[in-house]
Image 1 (cartoon, rainbow, N blue to C red):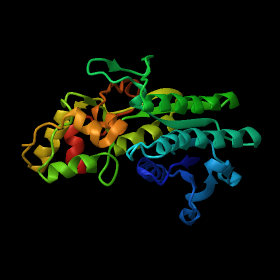
Image 2 (image 1 turned 90 degrees about the vertical axis):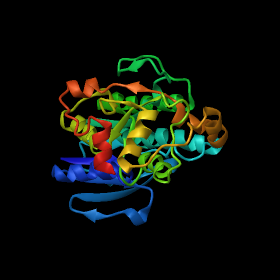
Image 3 (image 1 turned 180 degrees about the vertical axis):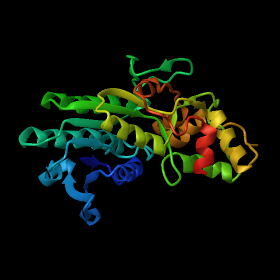
Image 4 (image 1 turned 120 degrees about the vertical axis):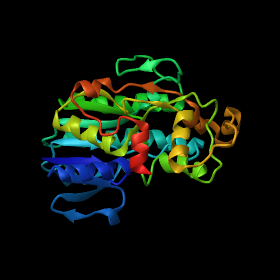
Length: 300
């Protein structure tokens, strides 16, 4: 099988490529940097410039599945211009792929898009499944609605569409975990806000595994990309401190202090989404890392 990945050089993309190669798949990938283009038998790069609507059409040759993981990081300061970049980096990449497929002969039958659990409103009580219809009115909530709408357009081309709402991805060398671990390792870590906000996390191997599972089983619709056992921010902090054998002595960081320091981006640390993974489990996906402590033991 030959697949095309946008965002293959990112955190999730690298692990997904590894798993695809393990499964003997050929990967085409898109990059905005020509120096990152490689030409190996099972890994071929192609240039694109989504903001200019440019893409090397040869990227689609022989491809049956597209996985779109592209999008600017949300962990940089949310200036007005950067917020536009967060949105456009998701919408424009999908638009370039859609417009290309609309105008060429191709073999693509399946489009799998990244999405985010930020679509769910912040709540410390409500449990969210894929059937939940309430949508957050936060900045990232609105971005995610448009992100998923851009993915849904592919159904107009008779292409099956799947969307994976990704939680907090835990990995050794990127994503949220190193930022969480650093102050704890320096003995100045503490819970954020009241610490009772839910953190729906997932191990890097499992989120890549879910994308691959959806591909292999030709699934469509919305799936939550989270582990089955969310934890509160306070429990997450204590579990990491226990693993590192560090004592937590600092008081909790007040919500107002985070908002002063980070501005609107402070919502990333303070919002609470208790999200379930029952749908992907019902389809037969078996998680490698169900418990947060086991994930931490592996990654740290």
